[in-house]
Length: 82
Ligand SMILES: CC(C)(COP(=O)(O)OP(=O)(O)OC[C@H]1O[C@@H](n2cnc3c(N)ncnc32)[C@H](O)[C@@H]1OP(=O)(O)O)[C@@H](O)C(=O)NCCC(=O)NCCS
Image (cartoon, rainbow, N blue to C red):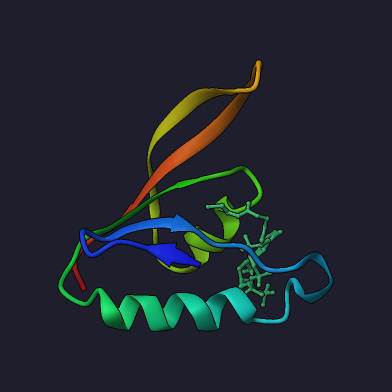
């Protein structure tokens, strides 16, 4: 997991064999404590979107980005100040 002091959640990955066992939730909760007082935001993939909805984020914008010639959908998601 990687995040910045401005509230940007940059990266969050759980190894495939460990998914849906609460690993990302525990990592995220630690980050949220560190970032208390900040509005949080991330650019979530389609796969990550349900996770962030579960954490109280809302979709602010649907975005399309090109990565190595492939156009991907992602979601700018925000969670207001705690
Ligand atoms: C998104 C990701 C980090 C979630 O990690 P995780 O450790 O599996 O998440 P958790 O077990 O903490 O999930 C917590 C809750 O989020 C939701 N959730 C997580 N993954 C979900 C999925 N694939 N579909 C639906 N809901 C999901 C569920 O509500 C889940 O609770 P539940 O299992 O009790 O139903 C993981 O799926 C991942 O690494 N995906 C690939 C990489 C990626 O897209 N990263 C984001 C880049 S920013």
